[in-house]
Length: 466
Image (cartoon, rainbow, N blue to C red; front, side, top):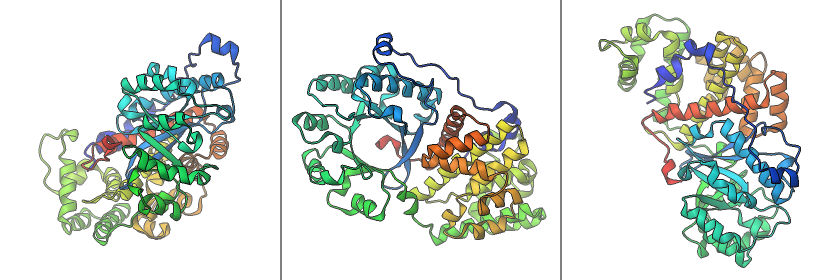
């Protein structure tokens, strides 16, 4: 797995001086008439744009939902919201969302007033689903249906939340044209409209559903086991990480071997001791030699011994490779791959923050802090117990175990980005002297980088089904 690690991960040190990510800030193109008739006090970009992961039934991340928690997106007229949507698209382009859409699908919230603008955005139709939001006080009319039909003929895909639209004839005609219907457990009117939501699967059996904001075991059970539960193709919410499938004993044994080798590397043990551990696991030895001899390394001769492999890679590079191998097995579950993806995103995001500060060693340690922050979840044990064999530097363990020290704040910022905690993101970014646009671009770079690493693996998420 992870054939391109040396180019995408292990050799990052040589590029440290030139990989600071700062997205260019381009002002949105806004219609002059709209600007005059609906003036808005808007920033040039929207600051931090939330991109929350969406999983399929096997718990693999296959899409991201893009939204902004900001009063400017709320109760405004259609002209103002259209201006806001254009600003959102401008911000997404500054974030280089096109790179992410190579590996994942995107659900993007837009208003009905922005239907005229969607083709001009030139986002890949097969990778983008537009969720149409109905503004407060706005009425859906059948006049929009021909326009929607034309956009669908051009390949665009759409989703709506029925609890917002109700059961009027225009709404029922709208549902017929959707690719996804959305059940939002956190919306105030969802439970009151359960009778309507229960009728829709029978009426529109061809439409798949996205369940948003699954925050309890009851809600997850409803999506998985209730009548018509097959309609839920995609799942989103904080409870999904709690409901992760535990690793099997077979996987745990392999991970125990990896941890022991990492302990020996940290202890600067003799090569013969490290070699002996590899020889106890023929599959692990095969993976190492396959990795060392992969074309990306450009070797002039084939490496056949562990000693030669260690000399070529170096102990630091081997340690990083093994840290990734901890999250892999021959039969990766969706839950395990989701943990790997989240760990990779945290690791790269924190590393880039260190690079921005100009400290190469700090960046290296920040990478390991992010990478090991979910190790306890992976191994189904307390994090302190999982980290004990690794004998990590104090700064890393202090951040992971006590939420203190130099690396605590970057880890908190990574976690706040995952949780869409705008207030905490703003406070931490200010404390670290990083502006929100830079947080946005660096975090998106980390998300895309994680997809690029995973795309080189032998196990892929089935994004084509979205």
